[in-house]
Image (cartoon, rainbow, N blue to C red; front, side, top):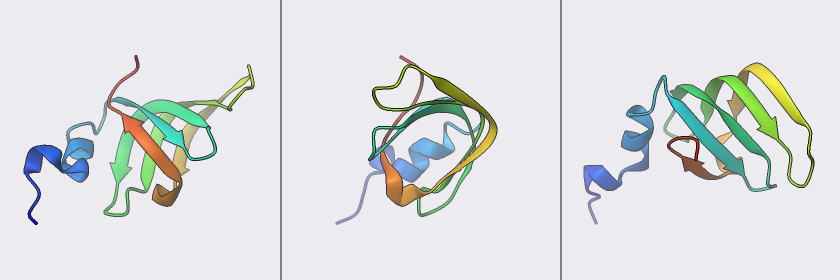
Length: 80
């Protein structure tokens, strides 16, 4: 089965390079920041990132962050 380009998640990531995204991990951790790079495994490099832990009020800031693709639950294209 061939995928339509509009439904290809890697193509969607390409369109978001340099823009803000939200990444939720399987453990509930959430990262909000700018997408710098990604690869075919959906590993992400983000900049100016704010981390929010599940059920914890504190936030942590990272200048740059690597997110391993197999930990990603979903990616939102922009802050809600």
